[in-house]
Length: 147
Image (cartoon, rainbow, N blue to C red; front, side, top):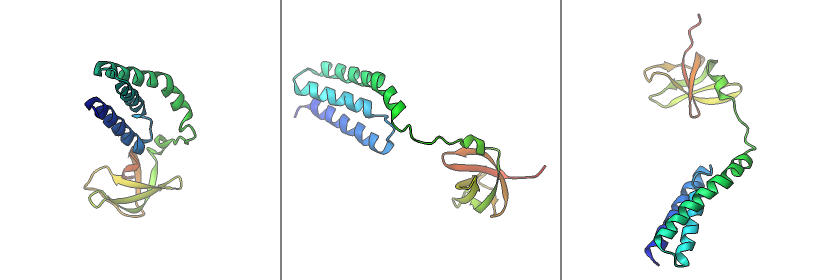
């Protein structure tokens, strides 16, 4: 097998391996370009043609199929309004300790992993806390002080 075939096959495998866990249609387009370049190599085109085909097919796939895929794939996911949680006062259900990596609170009937704004701060169960931010799937809270 020639070097170019190994290159395109390797890129195809890498792009697909990246796509599998992300499932976000991020590297499927260059995977298609790598497949087209591999086919171009197999029919005997030189490396510059293969590279041009890789770029062109990747570009065409992004331009013509990505909008369709974004519109129709994963469109059934319910969008959450997590921004509405910021500013809410919640009751801590498990001790919040950033150093120990513990802490939970319930918001709108859903249990969230919770962390304090400052690593030095701990919040005991039953304590009221105000949500100041969300980082990934974690609430970032500070002790709530009534005004």
